[in-house]
Image (cartoon, rainbow, N blue to C red; front, side, top):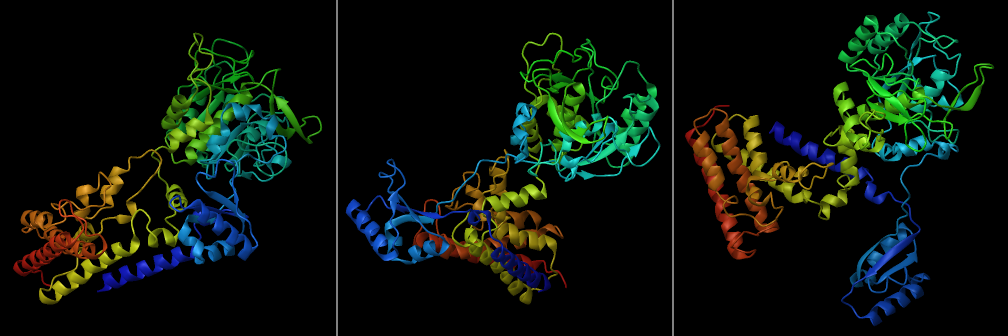
Length: 589
């Protein structure tokens, strides 16, 4: 009884929550309405209705365009009250539908005034990526000259870093290089100021390892890498490098990589046929630079060690960000070029990928490689896997990744959180399914009065499997996943016969005592599974009983009295079978 009451309370609570939620389907803005008159009524009647509306409501419906006459689509000014009034009037009988004429907008483009100057963001298809994620929850360590919170980093979140040059916690910038790099990764965006950043909801961890003269030691850089890994960094960007292999540096890279950190470094600016260190290490993603035309920038290293190419700028177009003037320490907007500018593009996209739920650094690298725009002729490895494509990378990362946020968004966008979806006929009507579940529980309680048995999860599972299945999964559309498995999971035993095809007519083999009979025959001797079999028989009985009134459609029997009789007979047989199995093998409470 306790479980039954909890189930009822859950359903009531869910119903209340749904009734209080305004679904996405009803949230749009509009100031006009759409009237779609039926095609099977005379045009004269349509014109009479139009005149009547104009006279009664002082609103004149007009064809939406010269192409609307055939479809009889009229537009008139109005609001929510007008929709309700018209739906209650006689016009409802002559229209296909009356609905708001919602205003749609183009997808997100930030309002930063200088965003139009960021050709580099358009080059990596960033707006497609933003439709999925902006990097929330990810921390990017900028191992560089430090980072100063200039005005266009005001809204960017920071976590504590460290200054290994001056041995202090505050890691501010005295060069401008690190701040510029941090801006590309996570510049405050959509703030009506300056420019944008790639993963602008990510956090920045400033780590200073380069001095005011631009140089830094291997020991400081290695410590910076370990610090980032130990303090929660998800991604490390190093727009620095040089010749000379270091075991200390490689150990630090391996340490961070083994802790799940994605490590990105600039390939170098010597136009040399080899990437610099640390970009050359196996667990570091090495980035060469592209100019504004998508070609290798003249200065960029290439060849051995280069993994991917990203915008770094050239004299024909540089990378614009908010940084500091090293002479005055004042905030300025400056255009830089270099593989130092290319690397943070990849770091920002890596943050976006990680924000979709991909954690393994090797998988992030694989996604970056697979999604990159391939360059067919690249004999000198100017581009590595190809040119960075943020949009494709995030889409590939999100494919099959189902997070709670994604699931809730899917529910909202498909109307599942709108009560009318369930009541007026969504993918699965809610009320009949509730009736099937409750009916199965009532049958179980009735049986329990005559043949006492302990309530168990196996019995509950059988009741649900037989009566309704996980019905809320029917009609599931998530990313590129196939729908058929969700239809199967969302179907009761009687509905399984047509679950793959998505039909509503019941298969007489499944909508009968046959499946429960097989289950009871197989599991009657098992101490737990027999209760699943008994529960499934009761669940099927409830499902068939409700279907008699709600959906009496059976293959070969139609939807009339013959089908209803078949369903009624098999519902009784299922209950009798469950009763017989419980009587022969009772379980003491």
